[in-house]
Length: 265
Image (cartoon, rainbow, N blue to C red; front, top):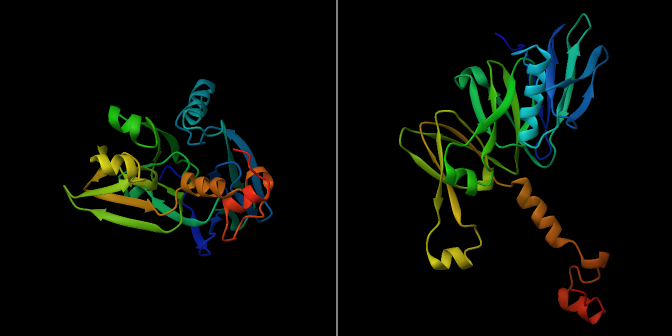
């Protein structure tokens, strides 16, 4: 194996975290901000790119880090290396309520495609790159734009799904229609495209967006019930205007704000 062979255990239900067990000189890389806790004798280091060692030159490292900028991620990742004599553990937490999914890339023909903010951590040696959409419709209306993340290698990687996770095994030619924001990731054998919802009433009054994502098998698809964008939208919509929350929970609701003098629009 090119990637480090790590052991792991996922704890929790709604707010999960993954505990990685490292043998001496084994390492794991993670997104900045996902670290939770670690044993002593684990060395934490900030690195350019993903630390996959595909190109050890300075230019190669800069290019690797630059690819991460295109996905909206930081130039840097954090590596955690066991410099002790025995097994050590390091843990990484979910960014919001949902499920952590363990992806064995050796079982995915060495490649897995996911949404840009799904990646949590991976064994050192796994390449975290970008996947350009070759279809204009998918790029313009797919919710993820022209760029998604791709995880390549033969090690373990961990991605996060919001809410409840659904795993679908699609047969050859089988099609699944999904809200564009609810896709977590899929194996490289799955064909991903965009389909117009259709119908004037659906378009104007449906409230579900104008496009479906169509996923055609064969392959594995992971779907999340609560995309972060949907969660953030609900939180923002629920925030009281001007910081006044007197109308919250009342029968009058927004009308109560008007009667209370909060008539700013």
